[in-house]
Length: 295
Length: 274
Image 1 (cartoon, each protein chain N blue to C red):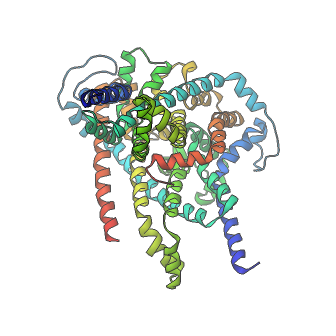
Image 2 (cartoon, helix red, strand yellow):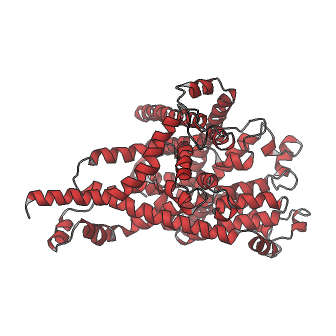
C-alpha cells in the first residue's frame, strides 16, 4: 500500500469517526449558539420571524430595573454559596481524611449522597423541612427569631435559604475534589514537618493549604460558574418571589421567552449572562493565579 | 486503650454525628413517608415508629409515576449510549489520526465549555419546535447530546496508550474501527463505565431542559413530573415524601451499588485524578 493511499484512508476514516459527533455538535450546539446571537438583535417572538432591530434589546435591557435586580440577586447568591461551600467541603474532606476503613466509607457516602438527587426531590424535601406550619426546622427558626417564618415567602430569608438548600445538595462534589487533592499530598511532607516540630495548625497552613491550592482554585471556579446559572431551585422553591427578591437572570430569560413570548429579548438576556460568566471566570482565574503565585 | 486511640474514637464519633445531621433531611423524608397523613401533623417524633405504606401505594396508583420512570430511563439510556459512542469515536480520531481541521475541532470542543448551556435553551427550543420535536423523547434527548467532557477525557486516555500496540492490530489487517473497538475501548472499560455513570446521572437529573420542551404530562421525565403532583397533592406530606423518595430511588440505589465508580467519575469529569 502506497503512502498516499494510506494517508487518504486515514483522512477518510477520521472523517467517518468524527462525523456523528460533529453533526450533533453542529446542529444542536453551534447552530443554536449562532441563533441566540442572531435572535438577540431581533424583536422575534418565541416561535416565528422577527425584524432586525440592532441593539435595541440591549439598550432596553440596560434600562430594565428588573434586570439589575436579577443580576444583583445572582451575585448575592454567589456570595452566599461559593465561599461557604468551599470552606464546608474542605472541613469535611479534612475530617474524612483522618478516618479509616468502613467509618470513612460510610461518612463519605452520607456526605455525598444528596449530590445524586434530582433537584426537584431536593426542593420537595426542604420545602417540607421548612414548612411554615409543620416543618421540623421551624422550632429552630422560632428559637432564633421568636416566631416561625415562611422562609420562601419572606424577602430576607428566601435567598439565604435557597443557598442552604443548594450547598446541601451540591457540596458532596466539592468534598470529593478536596479528598482527591489531599490524597495527592505526599505523606513524607507531613512527617518532615512533624520532625521539625510543626504544630497541627502550622502543618495545615504550611503544607496542606499551599499544596491544595490548585484544587481550591478549581472548586472556587467551578462553583462560581455553576451558581451563576441558578434557576431550578429558585423556580421550584420561590418562583422568583416574593417581590422579586429571588429573581435571577435565567428566571428573567425564562419568563421573557416562555411566558411573555419575547424570544429576541430573552436571547439578549442569555447573551449578557454568557458575557458575565466569561468575564467573571477570566477575572477569577487571574485573581486565583496571583493568589497562587504569592504562596 | 491509649489516650490517642481514645481521641481518635471521639473524633470519629463526632464526624459520624455530623454526617448523620447532614443526611437528616433524607431520613426525615423517609420517616414522613411511612406515616399516616393524620399522624404527621399531630406529633413530631423523629424515629421511624410506623411502617405505613399507604402513601406509596396511593402515589403509585394515582400519579403517572410509572410512565415518568419509563421516559426517564428511555431518554437517559439513549443519551448515554449516543454521547459515549460519538464522543469515543471523535476522541479516537483526535488522538490517533491526522486529518485537516483536527486542531481546530479540538479547540472548539474545549472552548464549548465556556458556553453556559441554559443560555442556548431559547434557540434550542425554537429548533426543536421547527423540527416538530416538542413533547417527544427526541426533543428531550437531542440538545442533551452535547457533552464535550466525554471527548476530552477519552482523548486523554487514548493518548496514553503506547503506539506499538496499534501496529499489531494493523498488521493483522484491521482498520481504524477495529482498532477502536478491539483495542482502545477494551483497554478503557473502567473510564467508559465512569463516563457512562456520570452522563446517565446528569441526564436523569436534568430539570430545566425537559421542563421547557415537555408540556404534556405523559411525556414528562421524573424530575419534571413530580413537580406536577406536588401541586395537586397540596398538603398531603406523606404522599409528597413518598413521591420524592420513589423518584430518587433509582439514583440512590445506583449510587450505593456503583459507589466507587461514581466517585471516580465525578473526579475524572472535573479533571482531577483520584
